[in-house]
Image 1 (cartoon, rainbow, N blue to C red):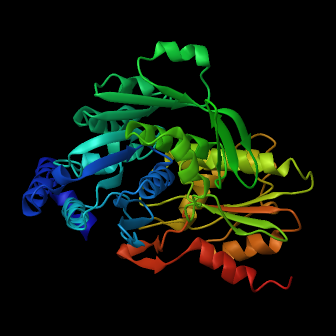
Image 2 (cartoon, rainbow, N blue to C red; image 1 turned 135 degrees about the vertical axis):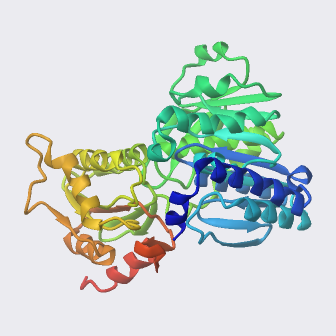
Length: 436
């Protein structure tokens, strides 16, 4: 019904509607963001983990913190799941949340910010003090019309934030964000050399002595060695963003090291659900770049055992969203996976079989692809059945990687219906059915 109504309302009226709501919300709740230090984390990937790391640093430093991420809401010691299927809530919800955070005497609010949220003015009249860029890669292109327009929406947060900017220097689009002025700037990198630091007029953290295992990540900054219970190179970027934040707020490298040492993995982000006799990992990766990074990380683990295989379970969202990336998913899977199981993700009102056909075009059109009909990959719409199939295919030392949903609580299907879900719990239930 909501989509039908949108078709009949002129675009300029919808824009006014989106623009007026944050104004009413801010007035209703008496501009709460002016009474708390608000941090906005923006980018395609890594926002949730970066949010979690920053909250961990602040809390261990003695501050009371509120946060909103894809996975949870948190005000002080109280936290609850984000079941909205929305990373950045609507304007009234955001202002109401900030008011509750202020009333609870929180000193910081850490918010994941999305380009779609900015496009709908959800950020308006929120007094952001600090903004952090994780990375910018193509996503939600249909909604914006082009990558350039999507990037421009992200830039708006840098335009309105005047206190502190923290930027991933390795991102190809960094120059678009570096051009905005701020009282303080910090950068972080895994790639530039020490000699290149002189090209920047602000501090840049460069991770050195990097080690990545199937249990943790470690690196050094100056003479301080960091070790985190996280997986994959991409999480070093997330950690660096959080450390830059700590430094910007007067928290030392040594304290950041201490505070991050025991930080637990974010549920649904490279989360190892089963360890033996084979590994089963659940990850939220739902973008082209994120999926490849996850597969690259796991492939590096496999090098320890030549006989281990990667069994990949994934789908892609429906409702006309990001159709372009479906075949790209297929190409990436063809490059890394030994077995492919295509399944439902969030089809919304689109035919689930059509989505899977779009994905398989990515590897079926590759000359000499190892994935050919009918034997070497599977299309199983029922996600539970697909997970069960993967577990039954797995042998000693194999790695099953299930991507696209992480720990999201729903599968969204036609007519606005939601099916209760949790990839991690489903894996446990199906694993317990095996005769091992």
